[in-house]
Every structure is written in structure tokens, then in C-alpha cells.
Image 1 (cartoon, rainbow, N blue to C red):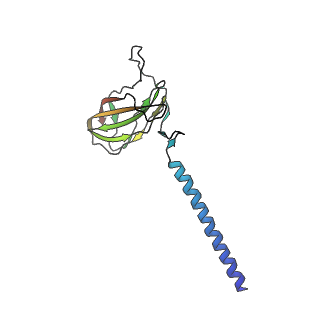
Image 2: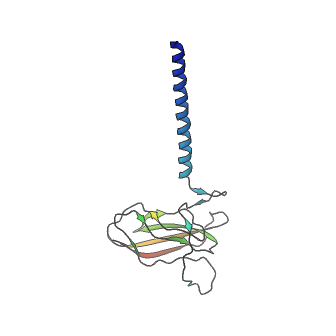
Image 3: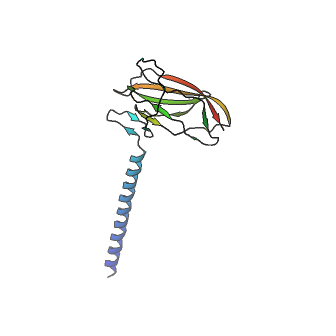
Length: 165
């Protein structure tokens, strides 16, 4: 009788341990899949925070063709907040991906993954908090071919004033 109890207890322990292993493995797979970046079939890493954007831009090209680069006026962010609400857009109609590198005083605070035409990152986290004041900010835009996402094209460095209040 006691032998049957031991076998039943051992079987229950094995079942519970097996179930725990299965649950742990499933949770790990789900979490790791959610943390992966959006990657196309060609291996291009698209920015997972980019969303559809149809913002209006003043066309200052005088009818010339080429890559449309957004301009930025003075920018303001709150002191003590490492999440900035600045729209980093790739205007619709561009024939390239954009990658933004945001620098202040020569230090890189944020670098996006590739942003498709017609999409924008509207909010991002910076790597460093800034003290209140006025800074020169550079929004460096690197552009890459839509064909492979790796062939560099023309880019731009947009300079602006950043107010941290």
C-alpha cells in the first residue's frame, strides 16, 4: 500500500515539474519574440516604434525632385524626462529609408532603426537626462536605398535649438 502511495507521489511530482518546464519555455519564447525588432525578409531592421504619418510639410523644393527632408524649429522637452515627444519622420513619397541620430553637444542620445517612407517615430527614449537650459541639437538623417536598406544615399544634418525646461 505504501509503495503505491510513493509511486503516485513520484508521478505527481514529475508531472508538476514537467508542466512547470513547459510553461517556462512557452513564456520565454513569447517574451523573446516580443523583444525582437521588426525585420524584413531581406534582413532590414525597421523601427518598431514607427507608425503611419501623413504630416504636412511645406514643399520648399521649387518643384525639384529628390529626397524630402523635414525641417525642425525650436524644440522643447521637459527636464528630468528621458522620453522625448519629437516626431522623427520620413515623408511619404521618399524612395529611401531614414535613420535618425540625435546628438546634443556632440553626444549621441538616440539612434533609430530604419523608418519607412510615410512613417514616423513620434516618441523615443534618450540615453541621458539634460539639465535645464538651451542646447544645440543635431538631427542627423542617414538615408538608405529601399532595395536593400544598406546602400547609403544622400543624407542631411538638421540643426536646431533644444530647450530643456
